[in-house]
Amino acid sequence: MPAFVSIRNLRKSYGTFEALRGIDLEIEKGEVVCVVGPSGSGKSTLIRCINRLESFSKESEIRVDDIAVVPGRTLAKVRAEVGMVFQSFNLFPHLTVRENVMLAPRRVRGTSRADAASQADRLLARVGISEQADKYPEYLSGGQQQRVAIARALAMEPQVMLFDEPTSALDPEMVGEVLDVMRDLAGTGVTMIVVTHEMGFAAQVADRVIFMDGGEVIETGPPGQVLSAPREPRTKNFLSAVLNH
Image (tube, rainbow, N blue to C red; front, side, top):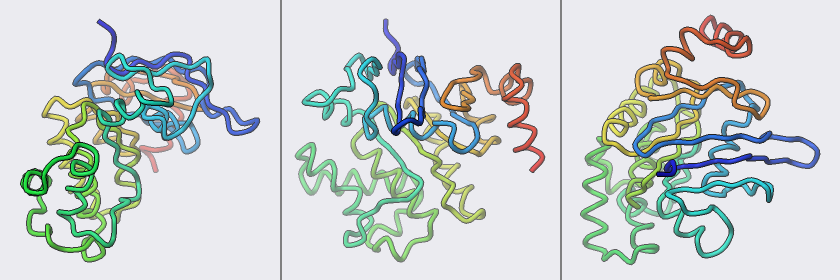
């Protein structure tokens, strides 16, 4: 049986700069994978390629649930299975919190207003902000807005959740509340690929940690091995710089 997310020879260039250099990766259904590494190592580009927010070279292949990630009709099918949470919350300021969560199911799936509202309320309770449902995003803290963004991504009932440094734009005291929601989510069996600099979170929650540098996967393995006993010098250097910071 093929891996749930399969990446073969993934290459991506911006002009003469090669951001991704032939990455091969397989992620199983229900697996929680944390991607770590220095800035500019290609982590965000990697996950943005999975739902083709970034195009990639013709010789590369990505499949999600055995569906090829290529332009055209199948891309909408892939994107319906893939939820994404960004560094910036990207909420619609003119819609209430509940309306932000309702929007995609109503537009994409044709869900009735009543069903979408009921699902939104369920998801807002799940991420711990039911009481904010009728407010507009500007009246919420950064941590609350990011929790709305997670609820909004979950509203499409995705098979895979991609997180692109979801806590990096938050004040330190708000980081914990978002990580708590992600911890709970990891326990539900949804496949998660998380680009993060939160090493404690990766150690606790990940089934596997991937260390990237220079557009390549340098090391991959269980968190106890990669984060506590790395084999590669580049991984050791990165972790000693991060953990001693």
